[in-house]
Length: 222
Image 1 (cartoon, rainbow, N blue to C red):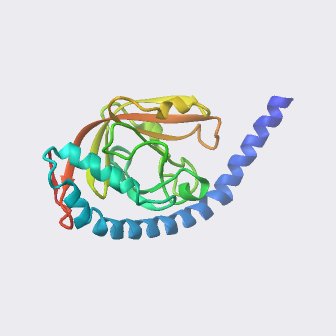
Image 2: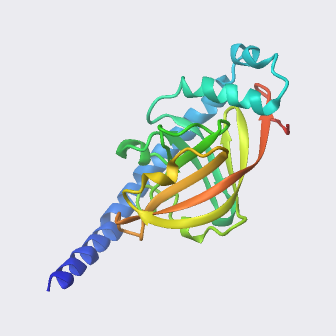
Image 3: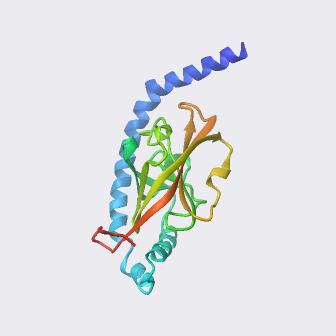
């Protein structure tokens, strides 16, 4: 009887989400994404600034330049603010990401786990996103396959990753975003759809970094 009751509760929650939460939150999410997109455009015109570029002018290694700029960038962004763009061609995703994984931030778009480094620094750069409601940016995370490309475009560089695997883990498993001795990307979302019982995580390894100079948005490979 308990299982039947639990099943009915889940079905009722799904029905409520589809009938009311999805359309309302989609509209709200669309408005917030528009604002985040405008905020990102402004940020890209300001960072890296001339003072930032002077800080790395003496550095010959492009990857080291990017690492320094990543550190400078991390000091100027705040929770809920736009920080970059995530593109995944295989699932038709092109979305602005924000800083933070709190409720309000994730209503704007995928959120960067603040306890993880930004792309450009050694370790795991991790982002969380909704699979239902608020535009559901990570809805099709389960469709990612080994070898799929993921681009994370930050104001200071573009990072091209290649998917290694996806995993289903317990919702309490924080090990998936732990630091590793190389640069990788982890994207997480609730699993299955309409449930927070588990998490689906996509792991991707850095393939290439492209750096650009202020204002021209023209990428230069290292």
